[in-house]
Image (cartoon, rainbow, N blue to C red; front, side):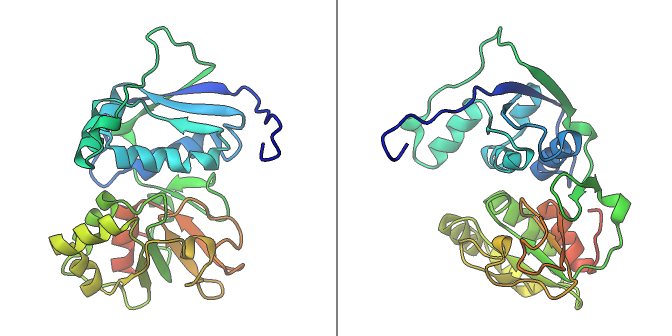
Length: 270
């Protein structure tokens, strides 16, 4: 394409991920995409588009939708998409970008190549175990595993919602003496809000190390875990060696599970 020639892309199939219900407390958008990965694995959406529809999408905020679509890459999908609806409009208005909103939604008679149905109300906290985002289990199945490092953030889970939840779980508590906790805010806007609301103090007082609004532990750029360590992350990938330490065991979870586990020093169902 950079040379001025055509770039050919195979026409992808479209998968309707039909959502119903509403997420229970301490279950989040991260658990939604982990459930998708549990069902189809890391190659289940190759040459496919994951299109999220159904009444359940109305219960998800734009940042939550962003978490789901961001990690859709781990399914092999060409792309993932939610409708641009009134929830999107309200988000853009709050960001003083309301004039940029455009309604984008599927036709009523849209035909899909496949359909995946997920009842949000039935989901439980999930975890992707080493060394693939597709190795998904319930947190209950591996609860109690000692954790050396907990990392909250990355492009998948560094939104204001994620950090506020984590901060309020950690409020008045301390990170376990056998674990370390890092927090990577997603933007300067998130940092400013957390400081102004006083919630950044909850994280710092609990013992968290606040990192820059940039790439970091997710790609092994600093804070690589120690040899043979167990690292619990809200990130999107846990492939062998990605953390910067080849022998480390990386687990992927929601911010809720990560924050609670940091307090107990072991993987804990929130």
